[in-house]
Image 1 (cartoon, one colour):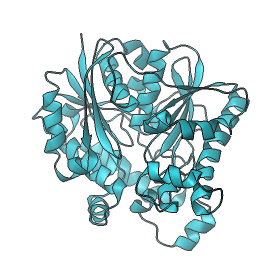
Image 2 (cartoon, one colour):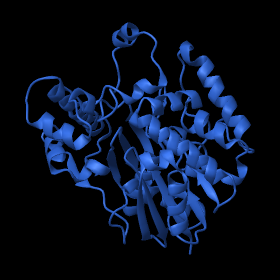
Image 3 (cartoon, helix red, strand yellow):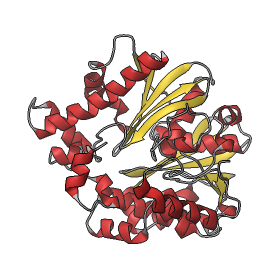
Image 4 (cartoon, one colour):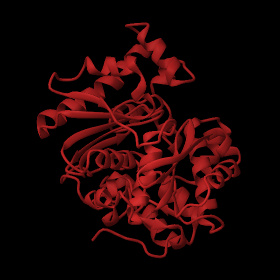
Amino acid sequence: MVRVLGVDPGTRSFDLALVEDGRVEWEASVDTALVARSPEALLEAIREAGSVDAVAAPSGYGVPVTPSGDVVDARRLAVEVLLLSTWGEIEEGVRRGVVGAMVYAALARVVEALASGGGPRSIFIPAVIHLPTLRPGAKYNRVDLGTADKLSVALLASYLEGGRGRFMVLELGFGYNALMVVEDGRVTWALGGTSLGPGFITAGPLDLEVVAMGGGWGRLDVFHGGVMEACGASTPEEALERARSSSRGLCAEAYNAMLDSIATAVAAVHTRFGVSRLLVSGRYSASPALLGDLRERLPGGVEVERLGLLEGASRSKHAAQGYALVVEGLLGGRASRAVERMAIPQACGTALDYVAHPRLAQARERVRRAYLESVRSPRLCS
């Protein structure tokens, strides 16, 4: 039997789930701020999991399936490919106390440690945009259709559903949300990150007039303008409480914009593709208040359910379990059929391959070059 440890780099915590034979045998959670200060804290938790065949490594914006043994420049892979950033931007964000930058710093340092060869074999995995199964046009001028953790949740859902049927998966995260359509085990359409609408951290898609008037935007700006900031709150729970206690003002407006954006996307999928089941995952899928507010906005034909957990799971998030299942399947375990159906082994390219705007030409080439030069066997799309 294959033993794989999934590591999900969340905005609030890094969750770990050890999966063997389709069952969670061990779980742990490490505060993200602690990991950012000392990656050793997460490495110690990984050691506590015991002997494993592989670690499903945190993969950010994703990369075609890449074993740690193929990595020749871990810092560059982590920062430029998996995080689409620079180390200077990350350090500046940490100095300013930006929560998202702390996640980036933690992930980059952990990737470097895992790729150093000093621990168990690690495998980096794709994001949704790397999959060859999406409908034509779904990737155009998109970067984030669901990061690697969101893809992992889709894989978990497909595995639990036996690879059958048609449903949507909605991941409600601390910072970002994602909506993915799964049909017979394959992701065929998705919106994620800033594209789906405001999140608790991100502002969501912006009017280009807002962008033009804002002047010189930077990488750290994706971590601002969300519901928490609109509500003057330090946690999503606090923001949720403030937003629901008032029907007017910027806080309530931001919260309603987040829910309306999700509901509009779900309604569009329901109407356009005829998919009626919605499986909700993520940290806030357990919030009766948030789910109740969302249900009120959905078409009557949409059935809402909370995504189930693997047997043995009690505290790890869906994404950590999904991470482990992806790599368990890649290594020939119980999830191998689900992984093959989702065409994860055929994932290719970089997250910027489908961006056509001329202002992004240099960035697209920079990320592509970083990918080609940081791994031994890059897999570009033909």
